[in-house]
Image (cartoon, rainbow, N blue to C red):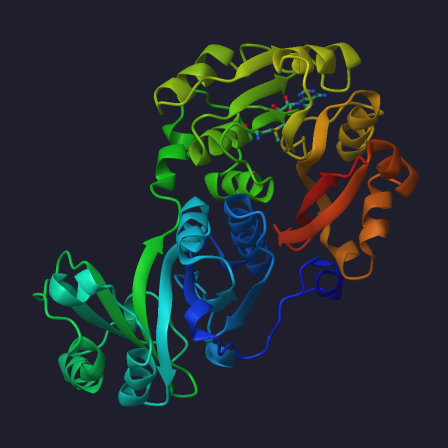
Amino acid sequence: MSSLFLVLIVHTLSSSRIHAFSHTYLVQWRGEKDFAYSPREFREAEFRNALQAEDLSSSSLKFESVMGDSAQPNQTNQNDIIQLMSTEVSKMNVINGASRCATVRNLYEVLGEGESYESCASAASEKDSFTMDERAGASWAVRCRDYRNGRVGKAVNVGKTFEREAIIGISKVTDQLRGPVSLSTPTVLLYVAIFPGSRYLLLRELGHGFPDLRKFDPNTRRCITSTPLEPIAAFVMANCARVRPGSSVIDLYAGSCATLLAAGGLCKDVKTVGVERDNDWLVPFEKIREDFTIRDLPPPHLIRGDSRDPKTLQEALDANNGNPFDVIMADPPYGKREKKDTNASEPLFDIVNACVTLPLLKKNGRLVVFVPVETEHLDTRSSMEVLESLCVTKPLLISAKLQLRELLSQRLNAHLSRLLLVFEHVST
Ligand SMILES: C[S@@+](CC[C@H](N)C(=O)[O-])C[C@H]1O[C@@H](n2cnc3c(N)ncnc32)[C@H](O)[C@@H]1O
């Protein structure tokens, strides 16, 4: 990882071993394409912001790797990374936060940790791991996973002997459950997982990440454009923007509206506005509206225009009853697949400048932007130097009342990376 991002991630991630079991979870992340595509910084930022969208008072969130050095993330099908996460957020908000995240596959509660089946079960049995109802009659099952060789995915399923030993080893916990075993649809699903370093965890499955992302895939959409944003990226943006029920959300470079679909996917009652410059043949608005209605989402207010033009921006504000937006999202042209205007200014400059021209963003509102940068610059530049290379200076940020909250990078190839920038409106 580049030194720049070690410095820049706003919420420092602690690598200390996590012992507060009552607030410890195991997160299994979802990968996409190759490993670098949804890097760890994106995943953690999505989860942290999704939790804050659920519970604004939450800030403590620590991640710890359990796979050790043996993890083999570069192999194909090794996309998933597993991490421990500790937080003070309530269990219900953690479950809700995880269910918003495109990068989360599964969420588990850590009931106990030890160096054997018996010791992790002893640790679990000291806590109130189950409700009275669960103890009295809930169906249950135990599954076993062996991650010691650093692999995730199908390779971690274990044989019958292992399973038998594990189930006997954790009997101190399963003896508390009086209900029937149900292998297919248990109410209480326990996992015994062994990690490198002979670290045994007794887990309970709590929930999953955002369901059915495929429903948002570009190849399921009616509006076909040449540069649609893939769903994981769009949901990461919407979560980093902390879209909440009732939020007003604008995309200044809307294209096929992947970001607005993600905002609607998170909270059905968001109000969405999209600004798009291309003509109806290239970006057909009617098809975009269909993409919302067939997913049972309210269609966005769409404006054909140039988001650098104050008249277009005023029209966008009018579409929000003259009020500033809670969220601005933008995935401006890279100048790679789409042609770039001659003498065009940097899109990030245009977006920040738009916030100077008109009161587009509410107090504490969030601006979330994807921007391409040369990979080689990331290792050597500070965050402000990166912003300055995109023509965004400190005085411009001050005039726009914007403060940088996150600067996350995603390596697209050896030469090109994509930055995810998150700003917050800090007006007094
Ligand atoms: C990278 S694409 C956005 C893709 C979009 N996120 C999606 O999922 O389809 C950039 C879009 O911005 C539009 N665009 C470029 N410059 C613009 C401007 N000044 N104002 C409004 N739209 C613009 C392009 O026509 C293109 O559709």
